[in-house]
Image: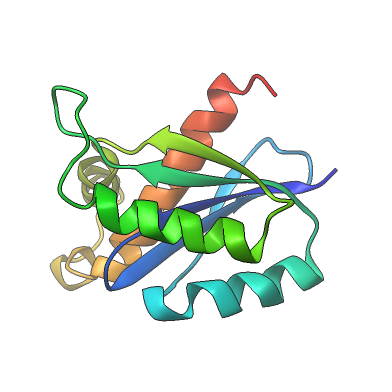
Length: 138
């Protein structure tokens, strides 16, 4: 069974998570510089079968797009130009960063580790993907 990949795209860093082949468990894959996202994904897709890609959709509390929405929209356009056959699913990413930090606290990571923004991005992508899997309808 092909995997599902989640992308928590940011201006500087992009967190990436992926499912197991049975699409049951989400795991953090890596965090990469955002400028390298397309080459990284080309390489990954050449090695792994991926059925769909989730891309976070940042929203404010009232459901309106957040300030970073235009940056991510640009990435989505760039992504679909490079991977026109790939199914893209936009998912609400509200609270994933806060949940990632809480997860780090619950795991008793040291303060230095909790300040690692790359790790927060990777955990955020994982939370977004696991939440999707829990509600999966495709």
